[in-house]
Image 1 (tube, rainbow, N blue to C red):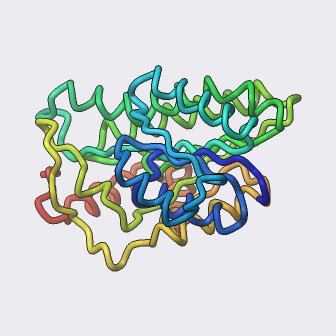
Image 2: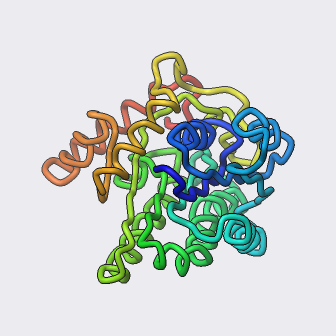
Length: 268
């Protein structure tokens, strides 16, 4: 990873922050992007007070011009792009019967269109370096989850988009990795949107038992080095993908019962 130029979106916390730190520790040149510019500046100061190997770019991935600006600023400073990590994301928790359409659109805008915008503008540079495009995904991108209609839809859309890019660039040396991290101890559940677009403010899961962002970052780097196409980190996720093909009805029932048991579950 030495001197590789890595862009990480959603880098102010959680998986994005852990990835930024992990790549920087391997002597990569890291570009950190999110809406929280103050947090990014603090992180950059901790990583590299000289500013030579870490670049902060305030980016709202919902805004196409911001994504274009992110890529242009990266190339202007470092001259190339080797790895793009599409990590910025948002979740939701509500039944389709009750959720407002604007919530569905917001989740799609962040998770899917944010990935599209960043990838579109970074692709010419990644083609030149025969680099890597990463999509941080979820088991929700392999099997629909109840109460997460928009989240699942956005991840399914991301998967189709990333797989198409992989095939289109088959002869150009561009590698595409989809990493399903599983339930990770981050703020994504606390900031998940309810039926009316408000942050739910609390997590329905015991965060202490979830995978740490640092473990996800290590798995990501290992998967990049091994040129993995898809990495499903949890055994539970791997079994779900397997069983949905063999016993789909049973798989649906197991998922229904599991999510129904969540505290304050919208599933009834």
